[in-house]
Every structure is written in structure tokens, then in C-alpha cells.
Amino acid sequence: MRFILRRLGFYLIAFWVSITLNFLLPRFMPGDPVSRMFARNQDRMQPEQIEQLRKLLGVDDRPLWEQYFGYLHNMLTGQMGVSMSRFPAPVTEVIGSQVGWTLLLGGTALVIAAVVGNLLGILAAWRRGGAVDSALPPLLIFIGSFPYFWLAMGALYLFGVTLGWFPIRHAFSDTIVPGFSWEFISDVGMHLVLPALTIVLVSIGGWMLGMRNTMIATNAEDYITMAEAKGLRPGRIMFRYAARNAMLPSVTAFGMSLGFVVGGALLTEVVFAYPGVGYQLLAAVQGLDYPLMQGLFLTITAAVLLANFLVDILYVRLDPRVRSN
Image 1 (cartoon, helix red, strand yellow):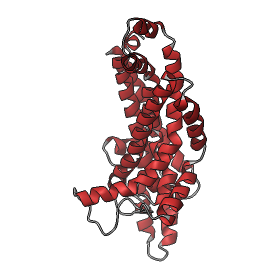
Image 2 (tube, one colour; image 1 turned 90 degrees about the vertical axis):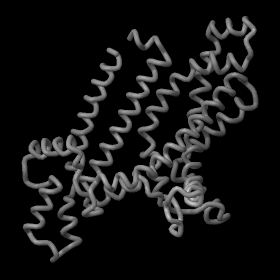
Image 3 (cartoon, helix red, strand yellow; image 1 turned 30 degrees about the vertical axis):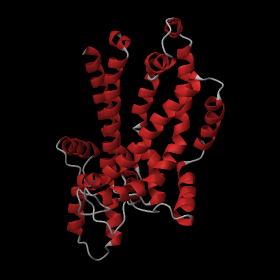
Image 4 (cartoon, one colour; image 1 turned 135 degrees about the vertical axis):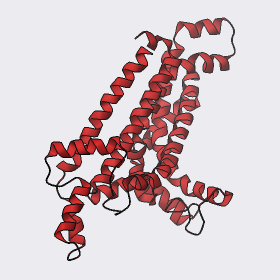
């Protein structure tokens, strides 16, 4: 319990720092979102309306510290403000309509890459020098050296435009009504294949290589030799003894990878016009949408910190040695 409370305190401090940076960074950017909105609506906004809009968005002439405490109060009360680029929609409503698609795309790709990559790494290390160990690591690392968007554009052109096997844009067809129907679910799955496949191809090599190297070191431990001397089945030794102990670094990597779900999928979402948080974040930056940028950054940060906190708790369960630290 002391370990968990210490980690919780650390993450609360990190969350406060992220909130502070989340407040400061957009204000250090050049330009003014209200001025940009005024430029788009010339002769249709009165001076008093502009001043009210500045107060609403928290970019008025108040001192920076006063804006900061007002921002903290709004965050603690769940008021993220109104989006500038999708005015007058609240920020929470905009994020809520997009975050599900990002979790579907990034989460699906992350789980597939982590599970398949770790399994390949276990097999490669257990049969070191075999076909899997000799051919797959260099091939997957070579594929992983390409950027997300490059593979995304290649897959889009080959399988979407040329062959026509998969849809080329959006998360579902415009002709299908969203709902819990097999037609809608299958259509979402077809739209998910290409963007998720590009992310999996880029990241699976890292998972395999990391697990392979850890498994090789674990296979040299004395308890593996003891298990083999007892005559245990190779499959049981591989998964129950070697892989279980070699999995700890992968658990940490999985928690940290959650933070790159949005960043890694951003360009992929742009290529496929996938309506996720990454695509919305790009639009918010281009439109100097302070409230939406802050809401998106805060959501991403909170998700990353929560994921890593849960990984720390899981570590206590998987590795009892952590409890004494």
C-alpha cells in the first residue's frame, strides 16, 4: 500500500505539471484565436462581442496568473470551455465524439502488435537460430523503419485505390446508419483494416525484438536449467517459467505505448481521413483552438498517467520484489 500511495503521489504531481504546461504552451504560440475568428467574420462581430468571446475563451487582458487559476478552477469542475474551430460546441462534446474512434484504431493496433510481437519473440528466443529467429527480426525491423504515413499511403493506394479491397476514407460508410447491427460493425471493421495494419507493421518488430532479447537472457537463468532437469514439458517451461518472467519489460512498454497511440495514429488518421482524436488535434492546432488543444492534451496526459499507474499496480502483482522497494 505504501508503494501504491507513493506512486499515486508521483502521478498527481506529474498531472499538475502537465496541466500547467497545458495552460502555458498554447499561449506562447504566435497568433490569437479570437483575432482569427474575427478575420473570418469581418463586419459581423461587434467590439463588445469580441471582448465577451475573449473572456469566454480565457484569453482576455487579465494577468497570466489570474487566467491560470481560472483555468485550474474550470478543469477541476469539468469545464473545458467551448471549441473555437467547432463553435459553439463544448470541448467535452467534441472530444467525446472522437475519442472512441482513436481508442478503437490505436487500441486494436497496439493489442495486436503487442500480442503477436511478443509471441514471435518468445518463439524466436526459445528456438534460437531457427527460421523464425533468423528471418523475421531483420525483416520486421526493416519494415518498422518506414514512417507510419508512408506505409499508410502505400497501403491506401495498393489495397484501396488499385485493388479496391478496402474503403479508402472515414470510419464507416455514409450510407449505413450507425448502431449495434452486424452491417454497421462489419463496415467499421473493413474501414479499420488498412489504418490498423499500417500501425501494426511499423510497431510489431520492436515488440518481437524486445521480447526476444529478454527471453534469451531469461533462458540462461538457473531456474530454467532446474526446470529442464526436472523433466518438465518444453511448452510449460517456455510459457510458465521463461516467458512469464521475461514479460515484465513488455508490460512496462505496453503502458508507455498507450501514450503514443494518438501521436502514432495522427498521420495515419490524416491519410485515411479517420475521425479520431489525432485528426482533430491537427485541426485544433491549425485553427489555434486553445480550448480544444488544451482539452485534447489533458485527455491524452490523463490517459497515459492512468495507464502507467495501473501498470505499476500490475507490477506489484507480477513481481513481488517491487513491494520491498
